[in-house]
Image 1 (cartoon, helix red, strand yellow):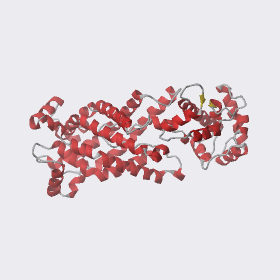
Image 2 (cartoon, helix red, strand yellow; image 1 turned 90 degrees about the vertical axis):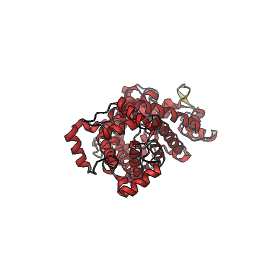
Image 3 (spheres, one colour; image 1 turned 45 degrees about the vertical axis):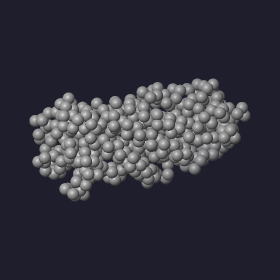
Image 4 (cartoon, one colour; image 1 turned 60 degrees about the vertical axis):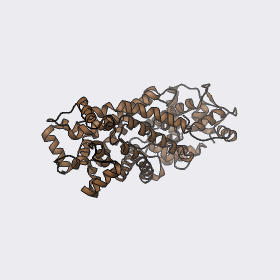
Length: 476
């Protein structure tokens, strides 16, 4: 099936990189049937088929879409060669990761181990069958040239390596739940590993939020009570809280904050999968902007469902000793005194905050990921723990920074009825009032304890996540 491609493209398979450009030029000329300097999807499919290369359903279209950067419905030589060179680099990373003993060849045992890492148990016969489909010289091992030859014209979404290593939202929990949900491979979905990873992430969030709850309560306290005329420092704030309710009061509101992790994660994941199906074109690979839209809509759906718990979390965090006996007592008193509408106070700024948070978080993370892959990914796509945590922390912090004013407005609206002498005001009036009395920096009250909890939250959640993965039997 691949013999003509092998003969034409890989005549001298050990050629230097500069010879590849000449080889690509010859191939491009062969595919450009009408000699207009561009290869369209029909020419690509027909030309490769004529050479004996059979592509799967929709694969030619996917390759074409990936390569056509200027969206002019045609691949010029620059786009064609750039696509092949970038795809070849990804193939090299995948080959290196499969070649466990680094001998330059992949055997059946290494294929079995790689599938096991993705959650699939492969029999000896199945591994040999896969190997035989790629092995061109009959040695029952695959070298780099055979690997490159077999996969060069397959679209990049067949490669799961980068997706597996570069996922961050399950691992990190810094107290906010506005990030884009995780991407799971098809293998992870079919084997059930996805729900184990969600459970591991949820438990990491529980421990992380509990460990940083005093700083989170201080943030809310400063957001609501701190002002130019009533400046509250970290030390004074903690002294006030301990004096009023003892050391245990530093964890007020933490119970509902961890309880809401489970329903929010489940709703967000299910909604995200449905929105992706609706937004993806022709069942193809979802693009970055579509992923952002699907993630934002999933976040909005989950927030809408659990928002009453967000209101209760703020009220319980700010409560005075004896004000509420617990979560249910809080809900009962809010309903009796303020009605059902009170459970959705601050809803609008909360939903609006999803867009800058999720958008900037995703954009910064993708930028850092691509920068690392292009500069440092020589032998593997695995960036290592420190790089992964660093990129996730920076992107989430940038997202928080952008959406913080909306988070502050939301918190003040949620707390309005619990503050003595305060009257309910709209979002626009509240922003105007803060700007007039405190200036722009007034929208960032409480940002210090918020940033102080980022590093311990990330560290705790990652350690717990790894322990949970091990306990649930998820391979690395």
